Image (cartoon, rainbow, N blue to C red; front, top):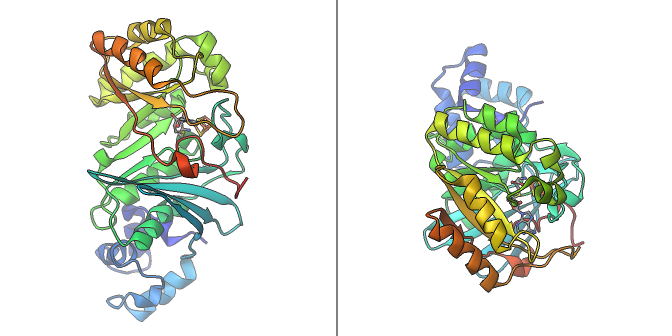
Length: 339
Ligand code: SAH
Ligand code: SF4
């Protein structure tokens, strides 16, 4: 039985028409689910009993569960249990400009980047749409505040769960529901070229971030084995096409690994790769994991790298570090409890 939180607005309208209900009820139902955040269909007081009993027969409204929350000053890490017992994590961050959350898109991840804790567990399965939607709903309920922005940067490769991720975005973006603006939603991919191409045709004002992390194939293949499938040249060309088609700036993520990809020569190579493109580079201080293959670059090395990009007129920022004290930072999320 499909979960009601997996229904994009138009699909819900189609369902209503099929059961001889009025199409406009979709708006009322969205308000019940996403604004009043009801737990039970019977709370929909402006919907007829007959329709409610049809909903009960046709939709599940099962919820994922909050299993644990770890809080620090500006960050909270939520561990969720799915109905089949699998675990995923999401992270809430309080910025001075609003509240953002980082959500997971899969249980585990098959891309297996060498620096990432999330990919250490091979993909068990894709998340259903409702399991992504409810990460946001449950956190909003928990903090009793609205979430302003969402990044799909938790566990999983979103473009390996493409259709569900797109439906998830449609649902949270819908103005009758959670109403999270498209420009406040970011999808991060490890560089799945067919996904980027498809995404450029969605006509959504959603932000795209691409994890590049190295400026040449030799190095990128060493740290990200996906580079053997989608190499840098093809990836950069795909990003160029994406920008041309969507007229939107793309974020390039570059994790700073000490003495691996943070040399001056790498900065120069990176300049050559992206020069003239409408991108901005986000330098990510590496969050060390339990499997200490890599060390985090020192502040000085990051600044030298940053300056080279800046001097060549490349838009660049250094990502603020969140949640490392509670292992809630990028790449530290796991699908296992307490390991
Ligand atoms: N699978 C997608 C999205 C999830 S990972 C992707 O790879 O883009 C989100 C970001 O965190 C990616 O840029 C990823 O490379 C980065 N990341 C992974 N492990 C990290 C770590 N230990 N420290 C800092 N960033 C990390
Ligand atoms: Fe998967 Fe992204 Fe981690 Fe790579 S960095 S293993 S793609 S979650």
